Each structure stands twice: as C-alpha cells, then as structure tokens.
Image 1 (cartoon, rainbow, N blue to C red):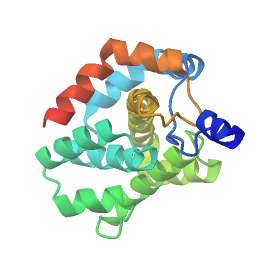
Image 2: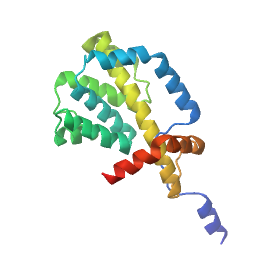
Image 3: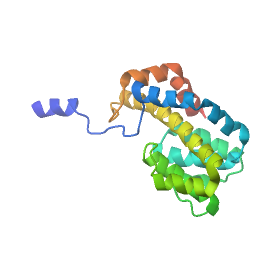
Image 4: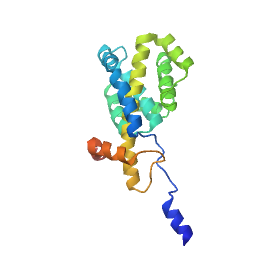
Length: 194
C-alpha cells in the first residue's frame, strides 16, 4: 500500500523539452528588445532568402521540438519552395542534400540550439569568415527569434502535458498558465483543427 502511494506521487515520465520560466523569458525578451533595431534590419534587408531563413528556423525547431513551430515553419518553408524531402532532412538534422554554403549556417543553427544559445567561439568565427559580419548577425538573429518561439510553444505544451499527468522536468506552472492564457490555447486549438 505504501509503495502505491509513493508511485502516485512521483511520476515516472516527464515532459523533457526546454521551456521558459518568468526569469528566463524576461532575460531573453530584454535582450531581444535591446536588439530590436538589428532584428528589424535583418527582416528588411533580405540578405538571406526566405527559404534559407526557414531552413535555419526548422533546424532550431528540430532541436527544441516545438510542435507549433514545426507546423508553422514547415508550411512557411513549403510556401517558399522547399520540398517535403528538404523539410524531413532538416528535421532529421541531415544536411547532405543542401548546398555547402547553406550547410555552414544549418550546422551553426543546430549548435546554437543544442548549446542553448552559446555556440563555441570557433563556430562563431567560422560563421563570420564564411558569411561576413552582417549575414552572420542575420543568422544569429533568426536563431534567437526561433528560440523564443520554440520555448514559448514548449511552455504551452508543458502545461498541456501537466494536465495529462506528465509534468515538465523543469518549468514554471505560473509561466505556463500565463502564456496559455495570453494565446497558447488559441494556437493549440487552431493547429489541432488543421
């Protein structure tokens, strides 16, 4: 009987995707607000094609595992001319079919996401050497923006997972509720209808 009570109180499965807490969200949001002029320049300049940008977004999304970002950026990539084979390869982190000059940015995006936004100095230097300072900053901006989207989406998924008695391994119930009330409910409902 005592063993059954212990098992009920300690879950055996956890939602393991990275999510936000109020503190981590405020840190990222503040950094993005400080960089807003650079981010606006990235969008206006179109130094990177929209298709290339979507490929970068899908690579980061593959690492973070946000179902909402995967759905959205898959559709955006298809609209920009990517094939389903391209998308499947990006989500599998298999870059062999992409042009060599694109593979460098895709590999960077993977490392960016896997290191929670802290790629190695050597990787940053290689990125700048290959793309120059402006395009490199554009790639980093896209990685930062999709990271925020993924972590917000994962925070919604974490709340839904909690409701199914699979709590997040790390997370903040109050932040998850906050994001869900702000818009996560509507996003989840819209995607599930599609």
